[in-house]
Every structure is written in structure tokens, then in C-alpha cells.
Length: 103
Image 1 (cartoon, rainbow, N blue to C red):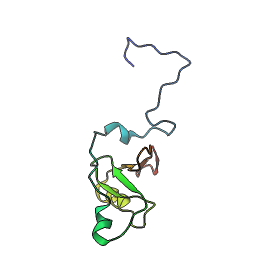
Image 2: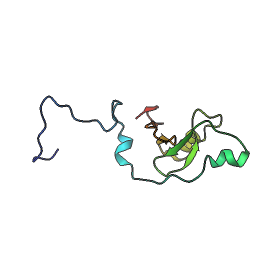
Image 3: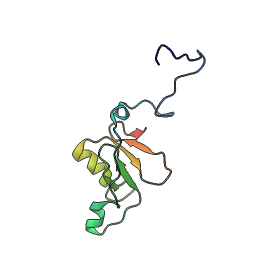
Image 4: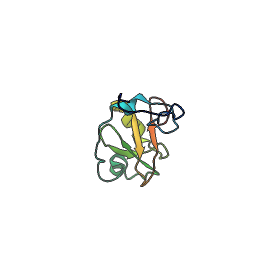
């Protein structure tokens, strides 16, 4: 808060994570565009996915942890890109692989 702003003593600061504990990985994100299509790794092998996740570091789209191949987690393990979000329209779900929790 800058010196020209005031906040009521009874009003708590807003957490950018909503009700989840703070995740410092959110602090360094830059906007990225989703790559078009579904999970390319699943498409290459003819497999299907249950859910899709988008890497918030690079925009890579991969099948989520609800899918048999879990390519989103494999992407994290290969790249250390910690955050994903659901590609489901309107879903607020974001996951941190480092903290292993929703953020």
C-alpha cells in the first residue's frame, strides 16, 4: 500500500490466492498464451485425456493429473515450471506442483 492510501484497521488485506495460503510462484508469473489443441503427447500416441492443464510459465497444454498419462506433471518434472491451471472454461483451478496444492 502506498502512503496516500488508507485502509480500515478492521479490513484484512486481500490475498491474491483467495483463501489458499500464499504461493510465491504466483508472484513471478508473466502472461502466456495457451498453445492450441489438446495434449500433443496423447495425440501422438492416440491416447485420450480426462482433463487438460495449461502451464502458467510457458503455455504448454498437457493432460492433467486426472488423465492416465499425467503429461502436465511430467512437464513440471522435466522443466521445473511449477504452476498449471485448468483449461476447462470458467474454471478457477490453479495447481502448484512444488507445494502440491491449489493456489
